[in-house]
Amino acid sequence: MTPLADLDPPGAGAVELGGSPVLILLEVGDPAGVAERAIAAGAEVEMPVREMFWGELYGVLRDPYGHRWAVTTAREQLTPDDITGRTPPM
Image (cartoon, rainbow, N blue to C red; front, side, top):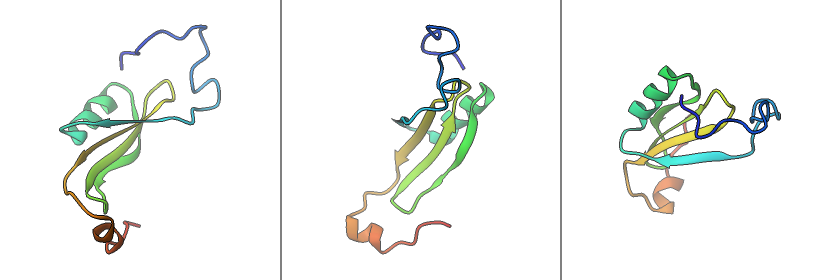
């Protein structure tokens, strides 16, 4: 993966600092395709891209620098009552 910027100072990335509390959420047209390209560039899968009970295709990746990225796209427009009636995946 191409970093957004070099670490400054070197060694001050999320991995070296013990992780990051941030999850960057990207809404994209093809989450599975984005995940595939990120994995090929060195990202690790935390949660595979899959259909979620709240109506999104969603997955979470960690880049080589320790940053977490969620990639998602809305598949259904659900009301809170619709979501409450669904069982979350185990």
